[in-house]
Image 1 (cartoon, rainbow, N blue to C red):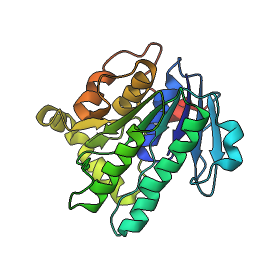
Image 2 (tube, rainbow, N blue to C red; image 1 turned 135 degrees about the vertical axis):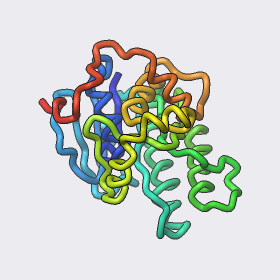
Image 3 (cartoon, helix red, strand yellow; image 1 turned 90 degrees about the horizontal axis):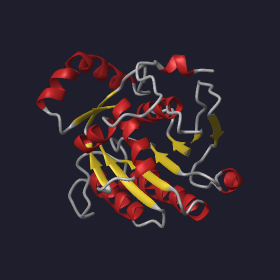
Image 4 (cartoon, rainbow, N blue to C red; image 1 turned 90 degrees about the vertical axis):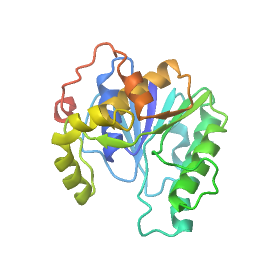
Length: 238
């Protein structure tokens, strides 16, 4: 399986990239983003662009892929609705339209979040726009499209968030994660489980098109042959 990954430098993207590099059935990963990845691996290839809304300059490198894992996302805090729509809806749909044209047999997986508004008419701006984005992506002419809507995500195996105060919060929550998992199993997951579930869904499909944390955890429990789940990110450099 050949994979395109957007957002590989973010917390979720780091976790997904780690699982892709560990999985022997993932032959190659093309990471596309605005900043370079501080990592090297024989399966990893990279495209760095100033803007991701126009992929025309690299279209010749985007064909022949089986899956796209779209892990880009920003917080809506302090953003106007127009700005948030541009970096969420407009960007996601622009990328998806290009990939659907070049790879109609592709599986496209979009990482969203819990609490989005599929009606597109709710009172919360971010939830409306996320819901509109999800609806539009699910209607795109891919072989299959899925939306992952995790709740709380615990970073694992050296994965780091780029936002300082998020990093502090995750460090505080790490010892509490086993308790959260017992008390709220339907609403918590990890970067490892998220990455494993995305690979599994791209490989074999899923019965639901919108998957929440409990779905993600159940799918990720299925074994992926040949992986070393304990390997930290630093051990993947080659």
